[in-house]
Length: 404
Image (cartoon, rainbow, N blue to C red; front, side, top):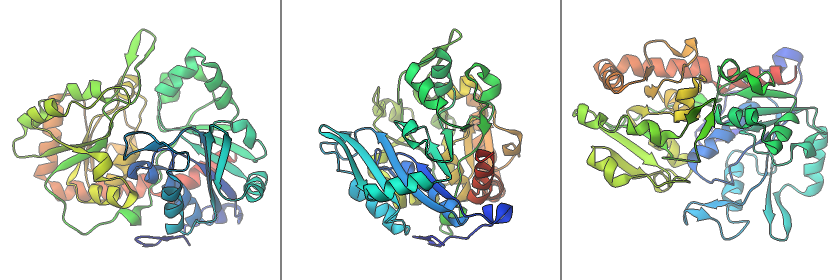
């Protein structure tokens, strides 16, 4: 079993039920590239969940991208600045000898973690590589792995770029044997990109999110105002959260009895308009200071009364059925989520626990509904997490489909 900061994780049956097989699996992500609490959980729960299923799991970060320094709010000054962060996180969960991280330095590639010999041995003998968010810079270098799985966590945007025929992206995505997407309806909405996209969701280690502590009387979310440029496809524009949040600026004024808080990142294209948001009644906090590591990120969610959040405009316009990995963690903590509708799958539409909205009036009514019967919504949130996002369920399905 894999030890964690909140106790030992339960071991599921998984592949043992299927064939009695212990697989060697590599998970690829961006923990060191972006050393922020939410990003760490996004990828770490794949690693921990697969290990709890009894697999032989390794984490390899091979994006080749220069690391980001959240303290400086800009690219780091040294290639190795985030190595201690990754090393400490891996050690905390019993994975100190099971990770590798590459940075493309000025003098060439630099690897940290496992030795070159061990890394090559792991890759040569692996049954499956799960590339979460399409982070691997050169997937062709991992062709020795029996199966390569691509997990698209940014649907619509990735698919528009593929439909446009961006050469390097088309080439990279084409290397993988099987393709999954958090956009559970994206294959219906943008079918031209091919690859037979299979639906999947964020795996959540539900025992690690349980909390008996009473929450603060505030609905929160953690977000970037704007991450990258809008895309245009079929004459329509697909933009960022900034576009959608503008439609709900007056929400706090419509709900004097409910407090709403945004923990925002720096944004990569435009700064969060903090003064204007506060003038409309929003509480705005700095996500990098508030929840920079996995522990504080988890506590922030656990201490929230629930989540209120918009989605990226591209997800809303694209109607791809995307559901946030962050919202899944709120559910696991027993915190209801009031989130903008992206045409969620039917099993997430239960009338409690997850309350979708599309308009300002619907957002007002959704928050009032949760407040009227908070205990029922909190219990439903936890039940949805256990039934729809629990790591052993999500990852058992992903692995079985990935292996064909």
